[in-house]
Image (cartoon, rainbow, N blue to C red):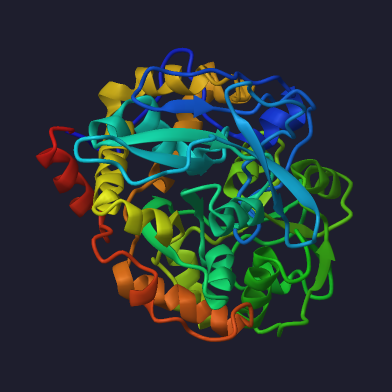
Amino acid sequence: MTDRNSVSAAGEAEGADPAASRAINGRASVDRQRASGGTLRAPRRTCGRLTAGLGGLALLAGILSACGSSSHSASSSATTASGGAATTTANASTSAPASSGAAVSMNLEIYLGSFYTWLPYIASAEGFFAKNGIKAHVIGITSGGPVAFAALANGSADVAMGDLSLAGPLLDKGVGLTLISGAVKAGWQLVAPKGSTAPTTYPSNVTYLKGKPVGVVSLGSSSYYFLQQLAVAAGLGASGVSYAAVGGLPANFISALSANRVAAAMVSPDLGYYLTNIAGDKLLFNFSSTQALTGAGGLLGSIAGDAGAGMWARNGWLSANPGVAAKFQLAMDEADVWVHNPANLTKLISTLQAEKDLAAFEQGAGAPKFFAYALPLILASEPGGESGTANVMKFWVKTGLLTHTIPVAQWYSSTTPATEAQVTAAASAAGVS
Protein backbone atom coordinates (compact mmCIF):
# COMPACT_ATOMS: atom_id res chain seq x y z
CA MET A 1 0.00 0.00 0.00
CA THR A 2 1.02 3.56 -0.58
CA ASP A 3 2.55 5.53 2.26
CA ARG A 4 2.69 9.14 1.15
CA ASN A 5 5.08 10.06 3.92
CA SER A 6 7.64 7.36 3.27
CA VAL A 7 8.57 7.94 -0.35
CA SER A 8 12.29 8.49 -0.84
CA ALA A 9 14.55 8.35 -3.85
CA ALA A 10 17.59 6.15 -4.24
CA GLY A 11 20.18 5.57 -6.90
CA GLU A 12 20.34 7.64 -10.07
CA ALA A 13 17.10 9.58 -9.70
CA GLU A 14 15.79 12.60 -11.47
CA GLY A 15 12.86 14.85 -10.70
CA ALA A 16 11.33 17.60 -12.82
CA ASP A 17 12.40 21.14 -12.13
CA PRO A 18 12.23 22.78 -15.54
CA ALA A 19 13.22 26.17 -14.17
CA ALA A 20 16.78 25.29 -13.53
CA SER A 21 17.00 22.49 -16.06
CA ARG A 22 16.38 24.97 -18.86
CA ALA A 23 18.14 27.92 -17.23
CA ILE A 24 21.23 25.86 -16.50
CA ASN A 25 21.29 22.88 -18.81
CA GLY A 26 19.31 23.78 -21.96
CA ARG A 27 18.73 20.60 -23.83
CA ALA A 28 16.85 19.11 -26.72
CA SER A 29 13.85 16.99 -26.00
CA VAL A 30 12.48 13.77 -27.32
CA ASP A 31 9.75 13.38 -29.89
CA ARG A 32 8.41 9.90 -29.80
CA GLN A 33 5.46 7.62 -29.34
CA ARG A 34 4.93 5.15 -26.57
CA ALA A 35 2.88 1.99 -26.71
CA SER A 36 0.73 2.86 -23.73
CA GLY A 37 -2.66 2.97 -25.33
CA GLY A 38 -2.11 6.59 -26.24
CA THR A 39 0.37 8.79 -28.02
CA LEU A 40 2.87 11.00 -26.26
CA ARG A 41 3.77 13.84 -28.54
CA ALA A 42 6.19 16.47 -27.39
CA PRO A 43 7.21 19.22 -29.78
CA ARG A 44 10.90 19.26 -30.49
CA ARG A 45 12.45 21.79 -28.13
CA THR A 46 15.71 22.86 -29.68
CA CYS A 47 15.68 26.66 -29.32
CA GLY A 48 16.65 26.81 -25.68
CA ARG A 49 14.07 29.45 -24.69
CA LEU A 50 12.28 29.29 -21.37
CA THR A 51 8.67 30.19 -20.77
CA ALA A 52 7.36 31.29 -17.44
CA GLY A 53 4.45 29.16 -16.67
CA LEU A 54 0.73 29.02 -16.64
CA GLY A 55 -0.43 32.58 -16.59
CA GLY A 56 -2.84 32.56 -13.66
CA LEU A 57 -0.70 30.33 -11.52
CA ALA A 58 2.33 31.11 -13.61
CA LEU A 59 3.34 27.55 -12.92
CA LEU A 60 6.86 26.98 -14.11
CA ALA A 61 6.23 24.63 -16.96
CA GLY A 62 9.53 25.58 -18.55
CA ILE A 63 8.50 24.42 -21.98
CA LEU A 64 11.02 25.47 -24.62
CA SER A 65 9.83 27.13 -27.80
CA ALA A 66 9.34 24.59 -30.54
CA CYS A 67 11.53 25.26 -33.59
CA GLY A 68 9.92 22.33 -35.30
CA SER A 69 7.17 19.89 -34.49
CA SER A 70 6.76 16.19 -34.98
CA SER A 71 5.76 14.93 -38.38
CA HIS A 72 3.08 13.01 -36.51
CA SER A 73 1.48 16.18 -35.21
CA ALA A 74 -0.34 19.17 -36.63
CA SER A 75 0.29 22.71 -35.45
CA SER A 76 -2.48 25.00 -34.32
CA SER A 77 -2.25 28.60 -33.21
CA ALA A 78 -3.83 30.27 -30.22
CA THR A 79 -3.83 33.93 -29.34
CA THR A 80 -2.43 34.91 -25.99
CA ALA A 81 -3.95 37.46 -23.69
CA SER A 82 -1.43 40.00 -24.96
CA GLY A 83 -2.55 39.44 -28.53
CA GLY A 84 0.50 37.49 -29.67
CA ALA A 85 0.26 34.16 -31.38
CA ALA A 86 1.67 31.08 -29.75
CA THR A 87 1.77 27.64 -31.28
CA THR A 88 0.77 24.40 -29.67
CA THR A 89 1.29 20.95 -31.07
CA ALA A 90 -2.01 19.16 -31.29
CA ASN A 91 -3.01 15.76 -32.57
CA ALA A 92 -5.03 16.01 -35.73
CA SER A 93 -7.89 13.84 -34.42
CA THR A 94 -11.19 15.56 -33.72
CA SER A 95 -12.28 13.85 -30.51
CA ALA A 96 -15.43 12.43 -32.05
CA PRO A 97 -17.66 10.44 -29.68
CA ALA A 98 -16.52 6.88 -29.33
CA SER A 99 -18.71 4.02 -30.41
CA SER A 100 -19.54 1.36 -27.89
CA GLY A 101 -16.33 -0.28 -26.73
CA ALA A 102 -14.08 2.12 -28.62
CA ALA A 103 -11.53 4.24 -26.82
CA VAL A 104 -12.35 7.91 -26.43
CA SER A 105 -9.80 10.14 -28.15
CA MET A 106 -8.47 12.95 -25.94
CA ASN A 107 -6.14 15.81 -26.82
CA LEU A 108 -4.45 16.49 -23.49
CA GLU A 109 -2.21 19.51 -22.97
CA ILE A 110 0.42 19.19 -20.28
CA TYR A 111 3.55 21.04 -19.28
CA LEU A 112 6.31 18.55 -19.94
CA GLY A 113 9.18 18.90 -17.54
CA SER A 114 7.13 20.13 -14.59
CA PHE A 115 5.99 18.05 -11.65
CA TYR A 116 2.73 19.97 -11.88
CA THR A 117 1.62 17.59 -14.63
CA TRP A 118 3.22 14.38 -13.48
CA LEU A 119 -0.17 12.78 -12.88
CA PRO A 120 -1.67 13.07 -16.37
CA TYR A 121 1.73 12.28 -17.86
CA ILE A 122 2.05 9.10 -15.77
CA ALA A 123 -1.60 8.22 -16.40
CA SER A 124 -0.74 8.08 -20.09
CA ALA A 125 2.76 6.61 -19.89
CA GLU A 126 1.77 3.84 -17.47
CA GLY A 127 -1.43 2.97 -19.33
CA PHE A 128 -4.05 4.15 -16.84
CA PHE A 129 -5.89 6.20 -19.46
CA ALA A 130 -5.84 3.26 -21.87
CA LYS A 131 -7.09 0.93 -19.13
CA ASN A 132 -10.05 3.24 -18.65
CA GLY A 133 -10.96 3.54 -22.30
CA ILE A 134 -9.22 6.80 -23.17
CA LYS A 135 -6.68 7.20 -25.94
CA ALA A 136 -4.63 10.13 -24.75
CA HIS A 137 -2.74 12.26 -27.24
CA VAL A 138 -0.41 14.11 -24.89
CA ILE A 139 0.80 17.38 -26.34
CA GLY A 140 3.42 19.68 -24.91
CA ILE A 141 2.46 23.29 -25.43
CA THR A 142 5.02 25.90 -26.37
CA SER A 143 3.82 28.59 -23.99
CA GLY A 144 1.97 29.03 -20.73
CA GLY A 145 -1.52 28.64 -19.33
CA PRO A 146 -3.32 31.33 -21.34
CA VAL A 147 -2.39 29.44 -24.51
CA ALA A 148 -3.51 26.11 -23.04
CA PHE A 149 -6.88 27.55 -22.09
CA ALA A 150 -7.25 29.33 -25.43
CA ALA A 151 -6.87 25.87 -26.97
CA LEU A 152 -9.68 24.59 -24.75
CA ALA A 153 -11.84 27.51 -25.81
CA ASN A 154 -11.27 26.93 -29.52
CA GLY A 155 -11.59 23.15 -29.31
CA SER A 156 -8.07 22.18 -30.32
CA ALA A 157 -7.54 20.68 -26.86
CA ASP A 158 -9.94 18.64 -24.77
CA VAL A 159 -8.25 18.77 -21.36
CA ALA A 160 -5.68 21.13 -19.85
CA MET A 161 -4.35 21.99 -16.42
CA GLY A 162 -4.69 25.29 -14.62
CA ASP A 163 -6.53 27.13 -11.87
CA LEU A 164 -9.52 29.43 -11.61
CA SER A 165 -7.48 32.51 -12.47
CA LEU A 166 -7.17 30.94 -15.93
CA ALA A 167 -10.55 29.24 -16.24
CA GLY A 168 -12.59 31.94 -14.50
CA PRO A 169 -12.31 34.65 -17.17
CA LEU A 170 -13.39 32.11 -19.82
CA LEU A 171 -16.29 30.92 -17.68
CA ASP A 172 -17.21 34.58 -17.26
CA LYS A 173 -17.50 34.83 -21.05
CA GLY A 174 -19.69 31.74 -21.32
CA VAL A 175 -17.04 29.25 -22.42
CA GLY A 176 -18.12 25.78 -21.30
CA LEU A 177 -15.45 24.25 -19.07
CA THR A 178 -15.63 21.74 -16.21
CA LEU A 179 -13.09 20.94 -13.51
CA ILE A 180 -12.90 17.14 -13.55
CA SER A 181 -9.85 16.26 -11.45
CA GLY A 182 -7.14 17.61 -9.22
CA ALA A 183 -3.50 17.67 -10.30
CA VAL A 184 -1.31 19.47 -7.80
CA LYS A 185 -1.57 21.51 -4.62
CA ALA A 186 0.88 24.29 -5.12
CA GLY A 187 0.99 28.05 -5.00
CA TRP A 188 3.45 30.89 -5.09
CA GLN A 189 6.58 31.25 -3.02
CA LEU A 190 7.94 34.60 -1.86
CA VAL A 191 11.73 34.36 -2.09
CA ALA A 192 14.43 36.87 -1.08
CA PRO A 193 17.97 36.98 -2.53
CA LYS A 194 20.87 35.12 -0.99
CA GLY A 195 22.27 37.12 1.89
CA SER A 196 19.05 39.07 2.46
CA THR A 197 18.47 40.25 6.02
CA ALA A 198 14.71 39.72 5.65
CA PRO A 199 13.11 37.86 8.57
CA THR A 200 11.45 34.54 7.79
CA THR A 201 8.55 34.69 10.26
CA TYR A 202 5.19 36.31 9.55
CA PRO A 203 4.33 39.19 9.54
CA SER A 204 7.84 40.68 9.84
CA ASN A 205 8.90 38.83 6.68
CA VAL A 206 6.30 40.89 4.81
CA THR A 207 6.54 44.23 6.61
CA TYR A 208 10.29 44.12 5.89
CA LEU A 209 9.35 44.64 2.25
CA LYS A 210 7.50 47.91 2.84
CA GLY A 211 8.25 50.26 -0.04
CA LYS A 212 10.74 47.82 -1.58
CA PRO A 213 10.52 46.36 -5.10
CA VAL A 214 9.10 42.84 -5.20
CA GLY A 215 9.15 40.89 -8.45
CA VAL A 216 5.93 39.61 -10.00
CA VAL A 217 5.28 38.19 -13.47
CA SER A 218 3.26 41.25 -14.47
CA LEU A 219 0.90 43.78 -12.96
CA GLY A 220 -2.53 42.15 -12.80
CA SER A 221 -1.11 38.61 -12.86
CA SER A 222 -1.92 35.96 -10.28
CA SER A 223 1.44 36.62 -8.62
CA TYR A 224 0.52 40.30 -8.32
CA TYR A 225 -2.84 39.57 -6.67
CA PHE A 226 -1.43 37.07 -4.20
CA LEU A 227 1.36 39.43 -3.19
CA GLN A 228 -1.16 42.24 -2.85
CA GLN A 229 -3.33 40.20 -0.49
CA LEU A 230 -0.28 39.20 1.54
CA ALA A 231 0.65 42.86 1.94
CA VAL A 232 -2.91 43.68 3.00
CA ALA A 233 -2.97 40.81 5.50
CA ALA A 234 0.31 41.98 7.04
CA GLY A 235 -1.05 45.48 7.52
CA LEU A 236 0.88 47.22 4.74
CA GLY A 237 -2.12 47.83 2.54
CA ALA A 238 -2.41 47.02 -1.15
CA SER A 239 0.21 49.62 -2.08
CA GLY A 240 2.59 48.77 0.74
CA VAL A 241 5.19 47.21 -1.54
CA SER A 242 6.48 48.28 -4.94
CA TYR A 243 5.35 45.82 -7.59
CA ALA A 244 8.13 45.16 -10.10
CA ALA A 245 7.05 43.43 -13.32
CA VAL A 246 9.88 41.00 -14.03
CA GLY A 247 8.32 39.10 -16.93
CA GLY A 248 7.64 35.44 -17.36
CA LEU A 249 11.01 33.83 -17.92
CA PRO A 250 12.61 31.95 -15.01
CA ALA A 251 15.92 33.48 -16.06
CA ASN A 252 14.42 36.92 -15.40
CA PHE A 253 13.68 36.04 -11.78
CA ILE A 254 17.05 34.37 -11.27
CA SER A 255 18.78 37.46 -12.63
CA ALA A 256 16.66 39.95 -10.67
CA LEU A 257 17.32 38.13 -7.40
CA SER A 258 21.03 37.46 -7.94
CA ALA A 259 21.63 41.11 -8.90
CA ASN A 260 19.52 42.33 -5.96
CA ARG A 261 17.29 44.36 -8.26
CA VAL A 262 14.36 43.21 -6.15
CA ALA A 263 14.08 42.69 -2.42
CA ALA A 264 12.05 39.54 -3.06
CA ALA A 265 10.14 37.83 -5.84
CA MET A 266 7.01 35.75 -6.28
CA VAL A 267 8.06 32.48 -7.94
CA SER A 268 6.50 29.10 -8.68
CA PRO A 269 7.40 26.09 -6.52
CA ASP A 270 9.43 24.59 -9.37
CA LEU A 271 11.67 27.63 -9.53
CA GLY A 272 11.43 28.10 -5.78
CA TYR A 273 13.02 24.70 -5.22
CA TYR A 274 16.04 25.63 -7.30
CA LEU A 275 16.38 29.09 -5.76
CA THR A 276 16.14 27.99 -2.13
CA ASN A 277 17.85 24.60 -2.33
CA ILE A 278 20.50 25.16 -4.97
CA ALA A 279 21.09 28.90 -5.38
CA GLY A 280 20.94 29.65 -1.65
CA ASP A 281 18.10 32.18 -1.73
CA LYS A 282 15.75 32.60 1.23
CA LEU A 283 12.12 31.45 1.43
CA LEU A 284 10.00 34.12 3.11
CA PHE A 285 6.44 32.86 2.59
CA ASN A 286 5.00 29.67 1.12
CA PHE A 287 1.52 30.08 -0.37
CA SER A 288 1.24 26.29 -0.71
CA SER A 289 1.21 25.98 3.08
CA THR A 290 -2.22 25.76 4.70
CA GLN A 291 -0.66 26.81 7.99
CA ALA A 292 0.94 29.89 6.43
CA LEU A 293 -2.28 31.00 4.75
CA THR A 294 -4.30 30.43 7.92
CA GLY A 295 -1.78 32.48 9.88
CA ALA A 296 -1.93 35.31 7.36
CA GLY A 297 -5.71 35.49 7.56
CA GLY A 298 -7.77 37.85 5.41
CA LEU A 299 -8.59 36.69 1.91
CA LEU A 300 -5.61 34.36 1.96
CA GLY A 301 -6.94 32.67 5.06
CA SER A 302 -10.27 32.13 3.33
CA ILE A 303 -8.65 29.72 0.84
CA ALA A 304 -6.29 27.93 3.24
CA GLY A 305 -6.39 24.20 2.54
CA ASP A 306 -8.45 24.58 -0.61
CA ALA A 307 -7.66 23.44 -4.11
CA GLY A 308 -4.69 24.47 -6.18
CA ALA A 309 -4.61 23.62 -9.87
CA GLY A 310 -6.72 20.97 -11.52
CA MET A 311 -7.61 19.43 -14.85
CA TRP A 312 -10.25 21.24 -16.90
CA ALA A 313 -12.19 19.73 -19.80
CA ARG A 314 -14.22 21.46 -22.44
CA ASN A 315 -17.92 20.72 -22.12
CA GLY A 316 -18.29 19.83 -25.80
CA TRP A 317 -15.89 16.92 -25.37
CA LEU A 318 -17.60 15.77 -22.18
CA SER A 319 -21.08 15.85 -23.69
CA ALA A 320 -19.91 14.03 -26.83
CA ASN A 321 -18.48 11.24 -24.68
CA PRO A 322 -20.85 10.45 -21.80
CA GLY A 323 -19.09 9.01 -18.78
CA VAL A 324 -15.62 10.09 -19.86
CA ALA A 325 -15.18 12.43 -16.87
CA ALA A 326 -15.48 9.50 -14.46
CA LYS A 327 -13.03 7.47 -16.56
CA PHE A 328 -10.55 10.35 -16.56
CA GLN A 329 -10.90 10.77 -12.80
CA LEU A 330 -10.27 7.10 -12.14
CA ALA A 331 -7.16 7.10 -14.34
CA MET A 332 -5.87 10.12 -12.40
CA ASP A 333 -6.70 8.41 -9.09
CA GLU A 334 -4.72 5.36 -10.17
CA ALA A 335 -1.79 7.49 -11.30
CA ASP A 336 -1.87 9.37 -7.97
CA VAL A 337 -1.64 6.19 -5.92
CA TRP A 338 0.96 4.73 -8.28
CA VAL A 339 3.38 7.67 -8.05
CA HIS A 340 3.16 7.75 -4.26
CA ASN A 341 3.92 4.05 -3.87
CA PRO A 342 7.61 3.65 -2.92
CA ALA A 343 7.70 0.38 -4.83
CA ASN A 344 7.17 2.31 -8.06
CA LEU A 345 9.81 4.96 -7.48
CA THR A 346 12.46 3.44 -9.73
CA LYS A 347 9.96 3.13 -12.58
CA LEU A 348 8.71 6.67 -11.95
CA ILE A 349 12.27 7.95 -12.19
CA SER A 350 13.02 6.06 -15.41
CA THR A 351 9.79 7.30 -16.99
CA LEU A 352 10.64 10.89 -16.14
CA GLN A 353 14.25 10.46 -17.26
CA ALA A 354 13.09 9.20 -20.63
CA GLU A 355 11.82 12.62 -21.61
CA LYS A 356 15.31 14.19 -21.17
CA ASP A 357 13.72 17.18 -19.46
CA LEU A 358 15.23 16.86 -16.02
CA ALA A 359 17.92 18.82 -14.22
CA ALA A 360 21.26 17.49 -13.09
CA PHE A 361 20.81 18.61 -9.49
CA GLU A 362 17.69 16.41 -9.22
CA GLN A 363 19.74 13.27 -9.89
CA GLY A 364 21.81 11.06 -7.65
CA ALA A 365 22.41 12.49 -4.20
CA GLY A 366 20.00 15.38 -4.83
CA ALA A 367 17.06 13.18 -5.73
CA PRO A 368 15.76 12.25 -2.23
CA LYS A 369 15.38 15.89 -1.25
CA PHE A 370 13.68 16.82 -4.50
CA PHE A 371 11.17 13.97 -4.44
CA ALA A 372 10.40 14.63 -0.77
CA TYR A 373 9.62 18.20 -1.85
CA ALA A 374 7.58 17.48 -4.98
CA LEU A 375 5.54 14.36 -4.24
CA PRO A 376 3.47 15.77 -1.33
CA LEU A 377 2.23 18.50 -3.68
CA ILE A 378 0.88 16.03 -6.22
CA LEU A 379 -2.71 14.90 -5.76
CA ALA A 380 -5.70 13.94 -7.88
CA SER A 381 -8.23 15.28 -5.39
CA GLU A 382 -9.52 18.83 -5.11
CA PRO A 383 -9.02 19.68 -1.41
CA GLY A 384 -12.14 21.17 0.11
CA GLY A 385 -14.35 19.75 -2.60
CA GLU A 386 -17.11 21.94 -4.00
CA SER A 387 -17.18 24.30 -1.02
CA GLY A 388 -13.42 24.78 -1.03
CA THR A 389 -13.35 25.42 -4.75
CA ALA A 390 -16.21 27.88 -4.35
CA ASN A 391 -14.06 29.72 -1.80
CA VAL A 392 -11.35 30.07 -4.42
CA MET A 393 -13.90 31.52 -6.86
CA LYS A 394 -14.92 34.08 -4.22
CA PHE A 395 -11.25 34.92 -3.65
CA TRP A 396 -10.77 35.86 -7.30
CA VAL A 397 -13.94 37.93 -7.33
CA LYS A 398 -12.86 39.85 -4.23
CA THR A 399 -9.40 40.51 -5.64
CA GLY A 400 -11.02 41.98 -8.73
CA LEU A 401 -9.75 39.45 -11.26
CA LEU A 402 -13.28 38.14 -11.87
CA THR A 403 -16.37 40.32 -12.11
CA HIS A 404 -18.86 38.05 -10.38
CA THR A 405 -19.26 34.68 -8.70
CA ILE A 406 -20.20 31.82 -10.99
CA PRO A 407 -22.08 29.03 -9.14
CA VAL A 408 -19.75 26.11 -8.58
CA ALA A 409 -22.32 23.61 -9.85
CA GLN A 410 -21.92 25.11 -13.32
CA TRP A 411 -18.24 24.22 -13.67
CA TYR A 412 -17.29 21.61 -11.07
CA SER A 413 -17.75 17.86 -11.54
CA SER A 414 -19.56 16.58 -8.47
CA THR A 415 -17.73 13.25 -8.72
CA THR A 416 -14.28 14.83 -8.37
CA PRO A 417 -12.69 13.40 -5.19
CA ALA A 418 -12.31 15.92 -2.39
CA THR A 419 -9.82 13.91 -0.31
CA GLU A 420 -6.86 11.64 -0.95
CA ALA A 421 -8.67 8.94 1.02
CA GLN A 422 -11.32 8.92 -1.70
CA VAL A 423 -8.59 8.77 -4.34
CA THR A 424 -6.95 5.80 -2.64
CA ALA A 425 -10.26 3.97 -2.22
CA ALA A 426 -11.18 4.40 -5.88
CA ALA A 427 -7.77 3.26 -7.09
CA SER A 428 -7.75 0.31 -4.71
CA ALA A 429 -11.15 -0.81 -5.96
CA ALA A 430 -9.66 -0.73 -9.45
CA GLY A 431 -6.70 -2.87 -8.39
CA VAL A 432 -4.04 -0.17 -7.95
CA SER A 433 -2.36 0.22 -4.58
